[in-house]
Amino acid sequence: MTTPVGRFSPQGGSPWGCADMAGNVWEWTSGLKLAYPYRAEDGREDAASGGSRVTRGGSWSDSKESAHNTCRNGGYPSAGWNFNGFRVGVSCPSSSEL
Image (cartoon, rainbow, N blue to C red; front, side, top):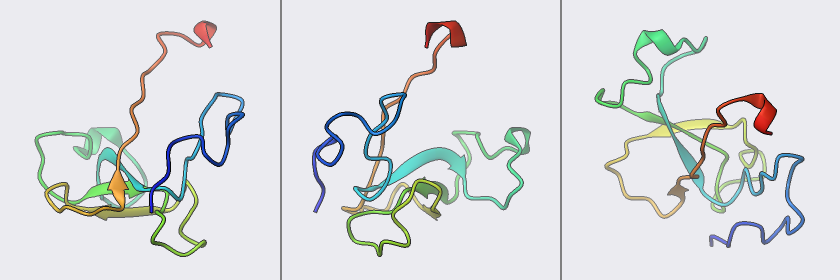
C-alpha cells in the first residue's frame, strides 16, 4: 500500500530534499509517452494533446526492478489506478536561490 512521503527517508532523500522518488506510486508527468530522444518542441509537452502520458518511479505493486526514478512507463490519465499519483513541484527562478 502507499505510505506517507518521508516514511523511509525521514532525514531527506537527497541533498535537494527530495524523498521517496520511487516505489510509492507511479508519478504522472506532463509528457506524452513518445520515443526518445526527448525533444520538447515535438509536441509531447502540449497539455491539450491526447494520448498516453509518461509515468515514472514504479509503485508499491511492482517488482524491485521497477522501483527506481528512471523507470518509465505510461498510461492514460482517465484510467483510475490506485498505484498512480503525482508529485507537486515548483521551479526556482534562478540557481542562486538554491
